[in-house]
Image (tube, one colour):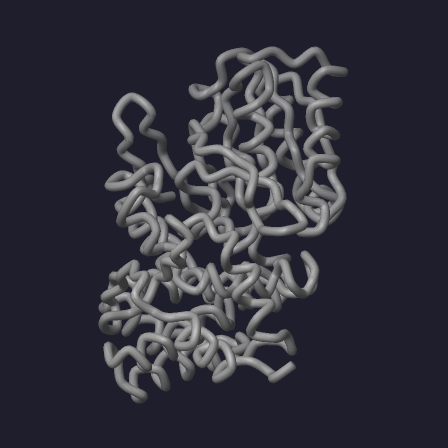
Length: 362
């Protein structure tokens, strides 16, 4: 097992990464304020790993409430959030009860937001079960639900007290979900870590083959990158926005096509290609650089062309992005490979050209 730390002063917390840590209740016990927890999971994850997690905690004398939600991005809404609140109230959970997210990014985001709101704040722990959530969404305290007009529009910054990352759970992860997670892994290399990007270019097929040591390294290096950025800019006033490369375009795809039709990582891969194309148009990177990004996403089994949706619709949805300031769209672009910046210099026409170059024309 490896331990990383998100060094946020008094709110610092560890990330435990390793095989079988899901059943090591002794890792969680020091972080519980009372011997009672509520575990939020979904109908897909529950049959795979809920029971052994609950048994481990129960054996250690912890009272466990189970909250099982429907699975899917389309359920990341107020109605499902209220399901969590209803269960917490029914089980008489207190503000010192710990809420535990056992699942992927949707479960983690909703659980964190519920923890931020319930009785004005209760502790919560992230136990991510997808590659994407292990390398990205479980770290950094972003919590949210979706709105019909935009993804993650309603939420809060609320840090967990602990992240428990069990690499064994990836054994049951569908191939499509694994590939989607790799989009966020690749992101770290593209925006700030050239040696890691080069390592990914060498080992991408072996990651798809789920070689345990390579997956653990990719997870650890991604978490190190994420933790460094979060510590430098917790509330996304500057550097942390760089983690959103491809997300402004990608969120438009997720919202425009209907939540759940495209996985987050798939949409981010296409969005990153659009960002790379726009960066090329601005003269910052070369066509060869764009080809390099495309080649890695393609080898990872990710899409590099967006769905049939009008560019005007993209622009409409992108105006809801949280980086928009004073009505100006701020995008994460590449000044160079492994050198991302946030920029508002692109015109609507230039953005439209980048979208059209990387999507099926509506």
